[in-house]
Image (cartoon, rainbow, N blue to C red):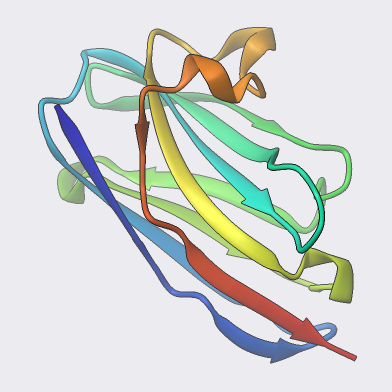
Length: 129
């Protein structure tokens, strides 16, 4: 069983930046997909970004169209930590952000949240105008 713990949320003004972290502990699959999802007030949870992990090395990254060019997903393998660097934040980025993990590479289905079997508790990011 994998445990995921997010941190790094907070409140910023539009145009600002935040970096979210997600520490993974417990059994880690040799090949896995680690993703970031978010749920904005009154909306369904949506995929934001994901990265494939192969035996400790990172692979292809994936992004939702709404965050491309502004968000960067990365992983520090030595620390078993996933990051989400969020730049040029907009008010519509306000949401609870969740880290998730599933077995196997990400691929085209990386946004299918039902395929992820480990989830963190979430960290809130609030962007004001």
